[in-house]
Length: 149
Image (cartoon, rainbow, N blue to C red; front, side, top):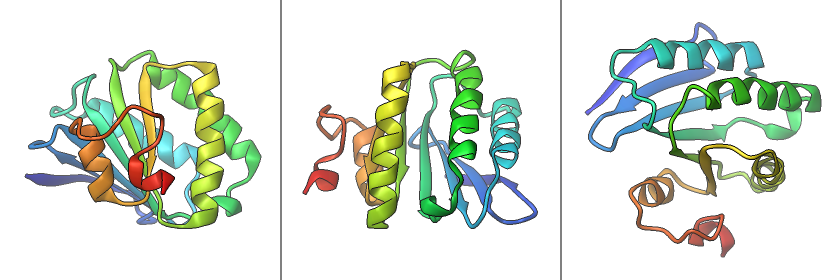
């Protein structure tokens, strides 16, 4: 059962809980700021259905990554570190179907992995593939099988 609980006024962030799959789905599109993402995360953490080991699916298909300034990416990584301290161990699937965004995200994930975290990140080209990985039906090579083909 999917239940929407947050829609930012700019409609750039929409978060839902998929309780059957134990996944938080964040659909991010348009121009979103780090402050909007932080506000969205705060709402998630305060929601009664949230628990620290709940997996996450970030649907970034509606986002043009090359329009996001590098300063925002750096700020987001600093902010994410604060949230990592408040989470358990979980999977975070990032989904994009745009080729340039896929490769930018791949580079950003490489940097995040070097920093170290309790999050197991994977990059996917479809939500279906992301859900399969979250459910444990994908390999553990760093990227989904479909992403590497």
